[in-house]
Image 1 (cartoon, rainbow, N blue to C red):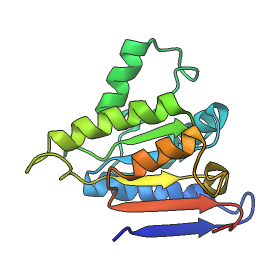
Image 2: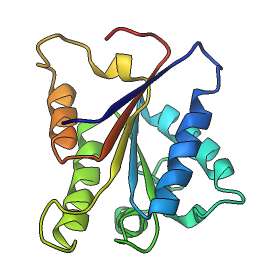
Image 3: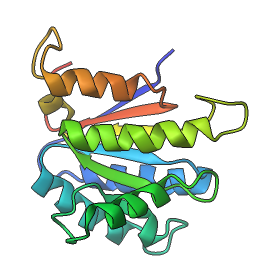
Length: 172
């Protein structure tokens, strides 16, 4: 049975603090957290905020990454290496922030599937958490026919131990 946690609040109500809390929890549990948010610029901004939440916690700043290279100018190979560090199994709980784009979601799934494959007991045994920020904007059609909606469903099908949806509007 899917475990779903919904956080709703008005604009500037402190929803990002909930993401910071889950990031810290994942660090303690030593499992990765994937955060999906609306837009590349927003993913960069959220990444900066989450870096601030690492102060004084188990989470190392280097294990909090944003998928886009527009934030830091790293080339593809360096960025892939940094993202891979988010999923270093069992050593820490990394956090990867991705925008609502198919390439970024596919990149996250690639590293997540590798993380799960390398776990004890074989494929799909390792835990991770999924957080969908601005979740009301991710579900645009009832039939889930848009390409990113289908990609998000694929990400969710990888079996997070907890999915958290954060929204400024409750439309569920």
